[in-house]
Length: 231
View 1 (cartoon, rainbow, N blue to C red):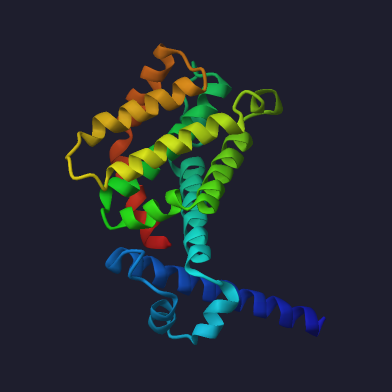
View 2: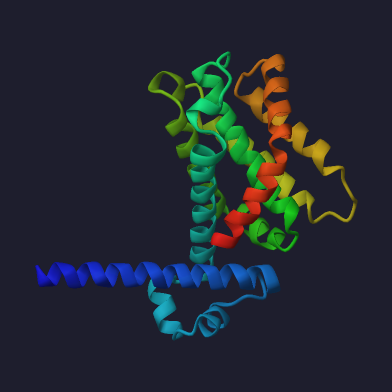
């Protein structure tokens, strides 16, 4: 019993330490950019020995992946419990439309996070450019989509379609590094339109979903900021 309690205490301490490291890394990524931030700098700012940090994260990519994973999980929680509980959907929407709209909202919030903080660009650029990190992004999106739909629907919303959506989202991330200015609201709507088409959604339904998303955009902007603060 005492041994188990000691193990639980150690586990809780590791969770708190990981949380402190993630918060420190996020602040440094935002201030210095991903490239200029190093594990020794993170350890020093977090007030822990580098060897202790290395027990939890062997390299900076693992830390980046953990941050991206936490960001998506917090976003998912806000979507399900704050923005879009079951009662929030119009009665005319089918269960499939409601489920897909939750995925569209996730995509919209990821873009809001990027658009609202230019320093995040180096963070996302790295995540989308390194193959094994990008693969984990695709896997997280795929798990989110398959969790939204019943077994009957999951075969339709296949891994390949999610891969295409994530690849397009990666292009959206890369475009933030171009020298030419763009009309981001228009590009965002074009991206979401084609993402929905990939899933075989009709033009009328796409219009309906994107109009609703635009109505909720002030909420997305506010919540995206809150999510970043809590990481």
